[in-house]
Amino acid sequence: MRTFPARSSLVRPLWATVLVVVAAACSDNDDYGGEPLAPSQPIVNTTSFNATLCGAQEVANVSSTGVAFAVLTVDTVTKAITGSVTTVGITGSVAHIHTGAAGVNGPITIPLAETAAGSGVWAVPANTMLSDAQYADLLAGAMYYNVHSVAFPAGEIRGQIGRDVRGSALKGAEEVPANASGATGRGFVAVDPVTRTLTASVTTSGVAGTVAHIHEGAAGVSGPIVFPLTETTPGSGVWGTVVTLSDAQYATLKAGNYYFNVHSAAIPAGEIRGQLGPIIGGGELSAANEVPPNASAATGRGIAVVDPVTLAISAGVKTSGLTGSMAHIHEAATGVNGPIIVNFGEAPAASGRWSAAAGAVLTPSQLSSFKAGNLYFNVHSAAYPGGEIRGQIATQ
Image (cartoon, rainbow, N blue to C red):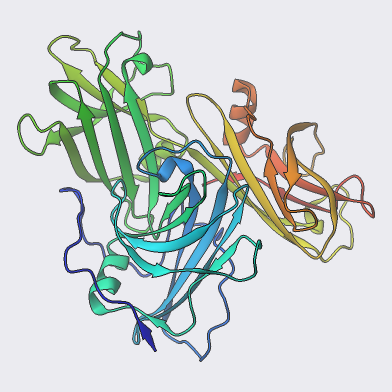
């Protein structure tokens, strides 16, 4: 069996905690993971961890049209693992599982192999096992998938395994009203979707913060303090906290309605602010969801991520069992046909990998529809020009 060596020292934020889980999802607790490879031998006593990958989870906050869904399954007795990442909208050069908490770049732990050149599917090598230390890191939410590209060699899209992660870039321009401060910040929250434990960390530069908080409010709206943050060391500019969310608070986070705010003596109402995002949605596509339904056996899975400030949308669909002619996001409730609002392109041709056009942006009204579950993926074909498979997008 292949065993990858444990890392002797793992850099984590001060606020990282170890949480034992029985099942979790990175971007929520819905089943939008990738397609695991069949194990080489029977695996029992297994636990699966899902992940959604996007550029917003990269420490550098990469602007990418790429997205991916992934799964990692571990035998809790032998520590044998299987897993894969299915990418769309990105031409990956290499992919790995790294060790590191949300908001921290860490070393490569497990190299992944593309199942076929250009397939966009990257798999854990057969007969891979975790050490006890690596297994502990996995349970603590301190491992992540990372897909690299020529354009972004350090990583274009990333997904924390077993944690729901939202990131934020803080600046004066996002304050209400905006200010001219040149200070900046980068922050992350990571939520265990089972226990609802939230770990938050913000690192600032160019500001002598007096206090910092997570507030409730949509982009462009000032709101009340919800969670105070504590500076790790006076003057360090690093702030964090660990709290447990209520169901309502978790829903508020998923809707993109929390923001980091760092206050200063010069601007006591807030010198730099950053909305926590992205807002994430996913859906399973089938012929039964079409209006009217049809007899196709084709299937698909889709992911959409929306920046809560700019409303830029990155989205992708991976299909199986059909030759699509075009694909889109439409606006309408379940059981209703609606207009196209986002066009998709397929790359490579006939691959079944469809991604939203670069530069796609939702209107405020369309964002409201997204949050309400009133957008859907639709893949058309010559046999079914009105749509062969469809999937309503549910926010995660």
